[in-house]
Image (cartoon, rainbow over all chains, first blue to last red; front, side, top):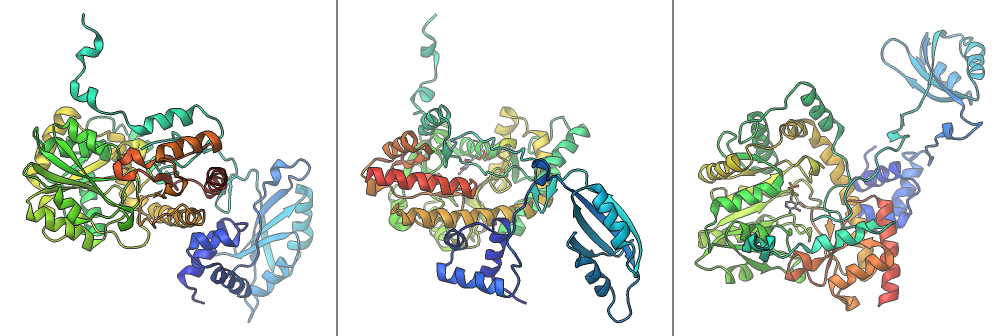
Length: 166
Length: 389
Ligand SMILES: Cc1ncc(COP(=O)(O)O)c(C=O)c1O
């Protein structure tokens, strides 16, 4: 679908800060508030804006650190439905956070979050690798998140400018 | 020995100290200040550029370059100016790489001025212009612009100040502090006057990348003007590289040669590491410029809208990263306003009066700050106005 420049502007601003008020959003995009409300509604209805969420650094919260694993999955595609059918069988598990079809050495990239390594290992051995079309899995545990969705977790760069300058 | 003071140059003694200095000292001594007083980008230099500079150090590029700067960089600047702004300059003979646009302005003035020569300085403007004219032995003649014209130049006001001694017009678009950008027609009007009275134009185009509504026109691209224009620019603002101190000046061959003569004696060359960084900025940094421009535009829209809602009448600035709202409704002078605002609400702004007589009644507010900072500043200014109106 084609969106107007103003709609794209709204999406870009919201993608960076979904909690911005509609008034400030309208001002930044140079739109009237009614236009802005209507555009947001349209974008939500069209599922261009799928959901509003926060980036949380769980590693900061004791007892909730959790583990994330990225799993390379090789599968046999099914006649007629290709990879979609097996992708669906995988993404329905609530442990699965993301599923992407990949080019290259494997077919699906699956991201799993669990409370412990054991929990993830159990899921992979009991649920994922036992699926009919799954040929093999390679599991990589994430040790530390430096940057996620464009956001650097360790905020190191404070404002180094002098307070008043010409 | 005489008193040390008595040795000092009379010219320097008589220069008045920059009004910005006082606010800097005041604001620096306070905690919790939200500053809209910063005249530089809030972005850190793009990583590709920083990385290229680090690499240049690793590879040992630590010696002088040619006086005019690395030829490869001048070639890069030449194609960049031609592709972006249709300003055509020969890399071998018409471009000199300098220590910031600041040095470029200084060199341009020193290359053309003899004692008694006058330079028309369009105000409100960057604080260095008039002192640099004076230091170069010339006489700055301020020409005021007005809010009712969105601080654009009125050709009649300009022409009134032209005398036999006038050598050049010094202007800046987009402007610091007003943000005003001159479009093609408006530049042509100035150009026609320069032709009629046979003057040079020193065109400070340091904010050329940061324009938000109309496309940018360079003075050097106005038909007939290249031969009488000295173009000043650099990497500080558009590429977020203020601390690298890298700029350039472009001028017809004779003028460029004179500029280079001073540069070679007074400076040798611009910093080598910064030149390597600039080379990379022209190659890959232009993508970052697009993102930064978008971000400034959104923040401009927010801040201008907020000021007008607060009753601080503000024109829509076409470029740079400054809002220049009127504070006349408060009955305070711009100096009083800025000082009171800093002391009572801890918001730093720069009084318009430091940029020239016509800046009185206005304050310069930079929107090179995060949205959160701008929102906080607006909240505090609202509180201030509620108490002071
Ligand atoms: C209009 C104008 N010209 C020149 C400069 C100086 O820039 P540079 O950092 O390249 O010396 C500034 C910086 O504030 C400016 O606002």
